[in-house]
Length: 210
Image (cartoon, rainbow, N blue to C red; front, top):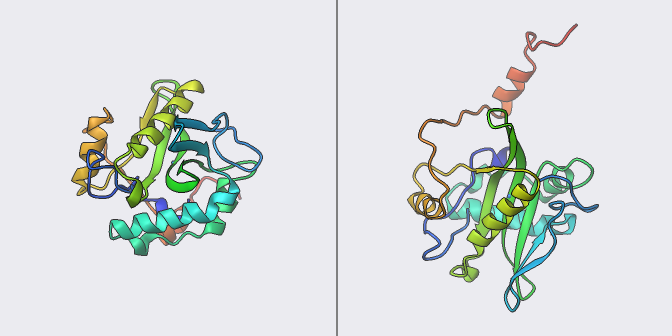
């Protein structure tokens, strides 16, 4: 995922009522994507949901760049399409991508990865990025992507979905609340990245035996 996606699931400033603005388990196909996700037509004449493959890496990265620009965080996107190919596909992919297409055109994506709750004793899914192309808003593509990812998670025994939203993104908050994805008032996200992370991980008292 690189440092570009370390922050949160990002969405633009409107809710999907206007529609969704830009804003990701586990066994995969040989070329990547979400295992068990087979192409499903949400609307036979319009929207196709399918697992992303390594051939989609450039389109996925382009969407992330648009997403960063949309919310004024383009400088945070330091990942490359090659990073996505390396870490998102193959034997041990770090994430899954669900792609939305309309008449063969890229319309949006949901990038996610599996998580696990030790308190509930059940797996879940974390949504890292949710994005819909401007020209395709108003068709509930974002909601369809989220529901599809949730359905696949449930199929694999999952019982919950998590994501983060920019604190000043009121449109995204309204969108998620409308879907029943509520704000968790008792939690706060903590992070350490880049050089600080490397120094932390490489500290002599990291528990490794000499």
